[in-house]
Length: 262
Ligand SMILES: [Zn+2]
Ligand SMILES: [Zn+2]
Image 1 (cartoon, rainbow, N blue to C red):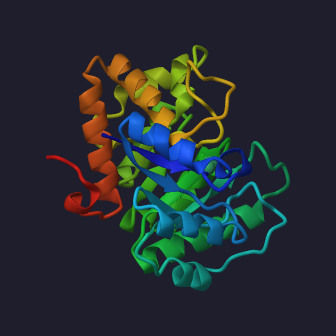
Image 2 (image 1 turned 90 degrees about the vertical axis):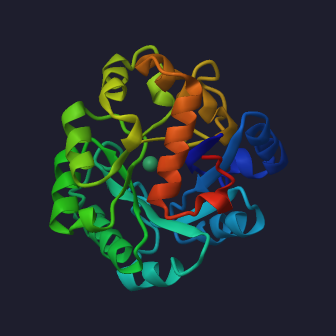
């Protein structure tokens, strides 16, 4: 069994063909996927997916790449997260690649998400691009280690991975790790222990090889797992079992509810 720890099934590339998306998950042994919210406007659609389908879960948060959407306070996030199928807070974090202004609003938004995660006892889904020092600094200042979470779609160095793991965070690899030109990231993936690792698609983006450039979907997370297995020289089944176990541990899901065999 496999779990896709990060996808966007409410995005138009995928929302119109959910039956096919769920069918490919079944076919490829992907038992669950976490549907991640990026704005308060999309959140009701994301929550509805998790309410409707037992194999889908959801999160609540406002992504750092959206400057012109309604801001969210910690109180509101705590309130929206009070739902059994909302597993985490995010995606949140810092993105200095896409947004070039002074970004103080991103840091303030990020702090609110960490405070909400600590109060609601639900882990963080952190997006970090070209902003590792500030991201790690704010995680430390806001005591993100007390609630933990996942560094999603990880593309940074081993030192950054190590620092995030020291704060109790998991490192999640996407289809990028299958790309030929991602040699440095492949080396990082070799070093991150399987018991600290998650895998994801970030679909509809970043489809893994051999689907690179096409629309991604949770069923394709199996190709991320296969690449990790190849890099670590372990059986695919072991990558599948360990990363799924990590997902259920981090998000406090009982194995029996999640149909995991020990
Ligand atoms: Zn992201
Ligand atoms: Zn995302």
